[in-house]
Length: 48
Image (cartoon, rainbow, N blue to C red; front, side, top):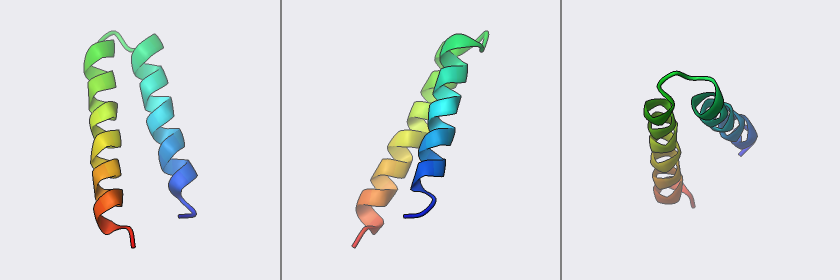
């Protein structure tokens, strides 16, 4: 649980980069949203 903030920050930074700075904003945003969905599913399955 200690690194949860770091993971959320990295996903947030990636989404901000994809939205405002990337020339391929849709592709980058989809990539980072896919990461967020995968991490959420993994967390739901592996939590006790």
